[in-house]
Image (cartoon, rainbow, N blue to C red; front, side):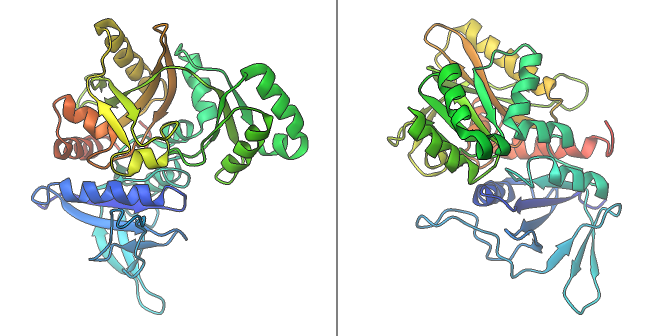
Length: 365
């Protein structure tokens, strides 16, 4: 029998393009080539799909972020066919064969937000990770918080600032933030990840600057009241068969590079953060965190994997922060490290996710 064909897709049209490449490099290194036929596919910043070049760079080198090399053959995934087609202007398209599973190691808008999932659904191709709805809601922090509050998870105070609000009445926005949230606050693009565009504000002047910075990434912005507490995270993984999802050991993230919070540099540059697994928590708190992480996973109807982030306050409260349906996925990223400390190595995690995708039906589930 032929080996299952796995297309590892990376890149994309957003500010997390480089983060995607770093994760894809780790997946391509770890996936079992004796078990799967692997096809690396890059999506350029302009949206073009290409067969990855042989010398495609995936890591940060001398401070330079990687990007998709567009010198490879142009590719398409026609709806309903499940096959990759290579084409060049002026030539006859060549079908390269059917794909059994797509592993979209992608983050941010036009990727992790349900858009590539919708494309793959239309193409009739199975894929790793959550479906269209869970991906879209998980990407939009405002709707995510609405769903989590409805599921009974404790969330912090926040305001949503839409494009029209800011353009027409920014003074009202600034006043509401001060009166309802106090200082300091964190300002985030509503639909971005990897801590892109996040700032901390201490007054109206710095808040206005922070909103403008967030709007460079997304016209929809979230302002959150600061929560004093430790950053504790759990990874959740779907099980093969009918067993319920399971949560990893909780881990505590600490910034080591002098940043005030867990920003992009802390996440992706060397020696900027530390992860302690298991986190130093009372046993009952650790179990409550794991149960909450699974509840968040199921509330969003996630599939495959997720990472769920919490704050643990000095008063002993657990506050839900966010869920990430396709977390950072290098071998040194938080979610893979949480699973490694829970008994599942990175290659085993990659294989488990591919097997989950192979065993689930295409279409409505």
